[in-house]
Structures are given as structure tokens and as C-alpha cells.
View (cartoon, rainbow, N blue to C red):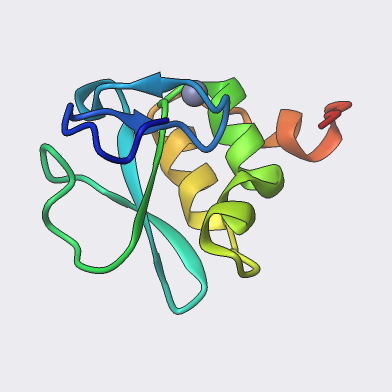
Length: 102
Ligand SMILES: [Zn+2]
């Protein structure tokens, strides 16, 4: 985590690992709701963004507090989970009932 470094790396809000932006999706918050920036490289939406791997584990961790930590505000991760669900990444039932420990 060296801020002077210019390499295009981002920290996943799900697993906290550093990876190239191309390996993750960019999440923006609009009106308190987490929405995925679908543009390649995450340039479509303006404002502050967070990055997350498009995997069930990382989306779950982001929804369970990673996003709120990143944005320092409560974030409704519903749209993000719905996005993952549409792509078969996340099963909503598992998010609701699964034993998720942080
Ligand atoms: Zn991750």
C-alpha cells in the first residue's frame, strides 16, 4: 500500500487483496445504493468508486460491511447483490441464510 506507486492496482473491498482493475468490477454509490459500473476500466460513472472481485465471497463480504467501510457510510448493497445474482455469481438465499462470519 504505497500511495506514491502509480501501478494500476486496486484493493478489493471483499477480500482486501490488491489486484489489477481488470480483474475486478467497480462499484459506485448512488443515493446510498451500490451500483456496478459496467464500463471497461470503470470509467462510466463518476464519483468515488470501490473495487470488488466478481465472486460470491467477495460480493458477500462487500455487502456485509466492506462497502460501508470503504465509503464510510451505510451502503445498500442490494443492487450489487442483484447484479451478481443476474450473472449467476451470487445466490441470494445463501446471502440471507448463510452463516456469514466477518
Ligand atoms: Zn476480492
